[in-house]
Amino acid sequence: MARGIAILGSTGSIGTQTLDVARRHPDKVKVVALAAGRRASEALAQAQEFGVRYIAFGQEPSNVEVPAGVEVAVGAQAVADLVKLPEVDVVVNALVGAAGLRASYETLRAGKVLALANKESLVVGGDLIMPLAAQVDEQRRAAGLAPAHGPAGALMPIDSEHGAIYQCLIGESAREVARLWVTASGGPFRGRSRAELSDITAAQALAHPTWNMGPKITIDSSTLMNKGLEVIEAHHLFSMPYDRISVVVQPQSAIHSMVEFSDGSVKAHLGTTDMRIPIQYALSYPERWDAPVQPLDFTALGSLEFAAPDTDTFRCLALARAAGERGGTLPCAMNAANEVAVAAFLAGEGSYLGIAECVEAVMEAHGVQAVESIDQLLEVDAWARAEARENIR
Ligand SMILES: NC(=O)c1ccc[n+]([C@@H]2O[C@H](COP(=O)([O-])OP(=O)(O)OC[C@H]3O[C@@H](n4cnc5c(N)ncnc54)[C@H](OP(=O)(O)O)[C@@H]3O)[C@@H](O)[C@H]2O)c1
Image 1 (tube, rainbow, N blue to C red):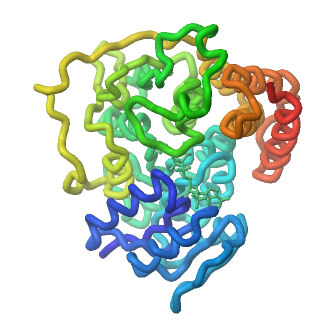
Image 2: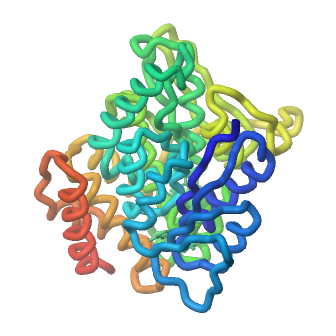
């Protein structure tokens, strides 16, 4: 029987690619709910194509006609409420930023599978989300919904790096894992000095060499903040201490990440750079369905290069790692500052190098607390956003 999915962020890069996977596998996936922000007419067209009854918008849509049979709700709570619909088995969280936290939390609280693109959820709330995921894993095993061996699949990463590590770890013992290698493309400014980055414009930073993504993650990829967020995400997802998570630049983006074992063996996950592959795996696990793309042609690939990341120039990677290592509410404050600084840069109000400066200033000003609740994290997030607005340069 087809699994019912809710796609939060259906009009974005991950959302539309998830719909493409659903379009190719109508016997396996039934889209039952959609959430979007501003692009209401696109979301309604998606609802018509896939026969979806429930839509939630982050903001009140203007000038749209709601077709018969479609129920529309508005507001952040309406978006998070979609995950509780009885028809929903799996929630694809492809919202952008910390705004995705509540939906991730509510999905697991409702005992549903979370297919997670919204890495900010784990960066901000990993301390709350991972224990919930462990509970849902237990419930799924007890109900016979999870495979007898390997991960129970309550929290499936969509990020290609984490999807790759997830697959490399299957069949392995956690005790024998020595190190996670998270690969990075290096972004469009790889090899440049700090001085060469001082007058970078949003248009230049939006031109990513290997992936076609939404604007916020594209800027994060260029500053290497995205890799920093992914290091924190890997720490939570795989219970790995930070000193055993390394980042390596792999400019061809053919190796999606690697796991090193205690005997010196390394498993790498390779594939075409197309997000529909990790999206589909997050929906198909423990099965594999037919590929939506051409497989990698090794005879045409040429060479694979590797390099250490330049954290003196791309300071966001080091800042995010430091926030993760300190833990508590610091990653929440760091993430909120980054969201504000990136939005200011995209709006032409802040400089490119000012993003790291703003993040560092907010991290220094934050009084770190242990993570206790979603409401506490929302308060820290709001405080950090206000502080960041004072530090836009
Ligand atoms: N793109 C990738 O290749 C990729 C890869 C790995 C991980 N990720 C992660 O996946 C997440 C999504 O990235 P993306 O590139 O798909 O972003 P995106 O293209 O900017 O899409 C974001 C989606 O969220 C919706 N949205 C924004 N604010 C909302 C709100 N308040 N309420 C409801 N919906 C809202 C947007 O709706 P409207 O457009 O209608 O406003 C859009 O559908 C991010 O966390 C990113 O880090 C992305």
